[in-house]
Image 1 (spheres, rainbow, N blue to C red):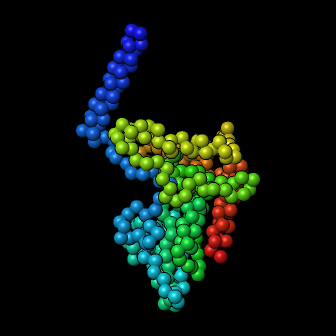
Image 2: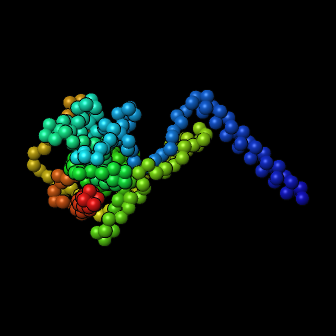
Image 3: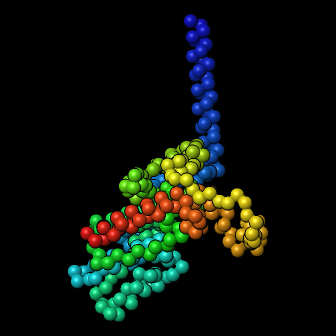
Length: 288
């Protein structure tokens, strides 16, 4: 009986000590205000700038207002259509609209898409648009050197970047997405300790690697070469012409150079097939 009592006392003391330690750690983290509080972790993203520059679907662009006789063109793409380097009045949608309205004042042009979008998020944006509006034409701004791997991987560039809705192929059939746009993946922590643990065990850590297990083999480089070469790409060289080159992952083909590798790998062929399926889905959606 005494042994049971001693065990209970020890257990109670251990739990109380652990709880007190956690309270002290939580208090210290709150005093330091570290780490910063985070919001919901959601799948995908839209315009991240001033809200006044966003349309009703959350993309940078003029408000979507359509009258009965308007001829509507939807411009779909990534950073090319978002055009953060341009003031709103000089965005591609405005320039195209001005050009078309010079011939017919009924034309209206609206933007769907944001930075680093692949055809997967573009397709989902277009699907959402047609759930609320109409269009007479859809124009896709394809950025081929990154759209293919944007479609293949479940995160943005570089490795394990922003999480996004992603499709895949099963026996040549388009499947997915794994998440719906804006779907909550993880709620924010209510404690600083929880925030620390959330960073240590973030859902996107290692996500690219785990996704790769279901992908065909990537490109295999030459193991021997004796011809000329350049070395001005070295990130350690202050004269480096491409400071972001260190993020180009040629091992898994999450790279802007992947589409130029020869001979074409099984993974690139898969990416091209996936891209064609997504483009076909967009075409069917636009033609309905």
